Image 1 (tube, rainbow, N blue to C red):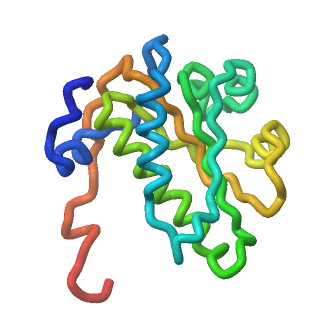
Image 2: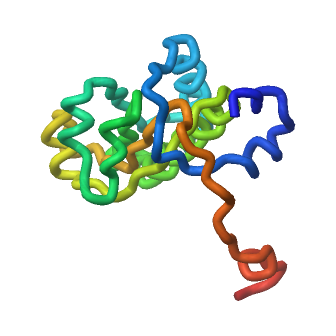
Length: 170
C-alpha cells in the first residue's frame, strides 16, 4: 500500500478501504502535516472555515473515547476529532458539510501517502466534548483514525450506478 503515491487520483479513490487494524508504527510529523494540509485546503462555504480539528496521540485519551463499535480507536497512532462551529455567523448551517469535506480530503491524502484511515460516527458526543473540553457551540462531526495499515480489506459490495444516480427525478 505504500506505493500508492503516484497512481492516478481516481484509482487512489477507488482503492481506498476503511482500515481498523494498524501497525504499531508512528506517523512521521512531515507525513501527518501533509495529511493535515490536505484538510486545511478543503473548500468551505464563503471560505469562512468554521471548522477545528483536535489531533489525539495520547493512548489514554484515545482509550477513554473508544466505544463498543470503535474499540480500534485506541490502537490507531493518530485520531483526528473533526468539529464544526454550527453557530458561526452566516455559514454555521454549512459547518458540518465543511468539516466533512475537510476530513475526506485528509482521508484521500492519507491513502496517497500509504496511511490508512477509518471514519468513526459511533461515538458519544457528550463524552468527547467533556473529555476534550469542546465548547457547546461546536458539534463533533466525526472521529478519524489514522495509521499504517495492518490489514487489506476487500472491496465491499456497492450499489450499482443505476441505483444511485439518475438523470431525472427519483
